Amino acid sequence: MSAGRELPRHEARTRTLEVLYERDIKDISPEELLDSLAAPLDQFSLELFEGVCKYSDRIDQLLDNASEGWHTDRMPLIDRIILQMATYELLAHRETSNAVILDEAVELAKEYSTEQSGKFVNGVLSSLAEIIRAKPR
Image (cartoon, rainbow, N blue to C red; front, side, top):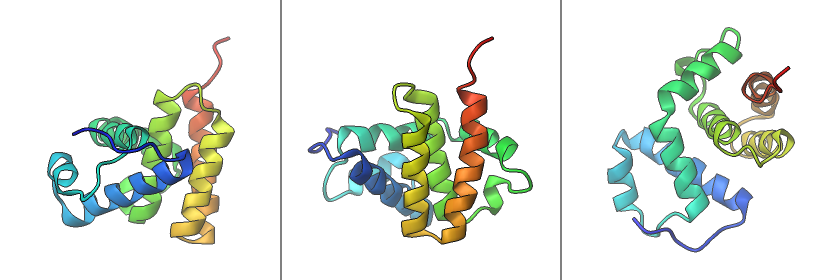
């Protein structure tokens, strides 16, 4: 599928959240969902979407290890998707600072979930960022 017009990063993350949410709610394959979209995803949204789908097992394992007492299968769906997207970014987009990734994830959690979700997302991602992007000694 070809990518649509480029969106600002915050809008692209929001669009990816919406599409991943739709995939989970409809319980369909990523390919089926992409084929059903009225408008194609922009390049960044498409990369986030495909990355979360492709590496979901690894991402969920990292999240399970970082979120004490909260396995991904018990997390609210929106929170889990936001955490998955941010984890993929931490892994794949080393040029994007931890602060930007965490801030964006917290803002999405506050906007689409709850105020407590923002704190939860921040805590999990802060721990995870230290692990994923630890500087070699």
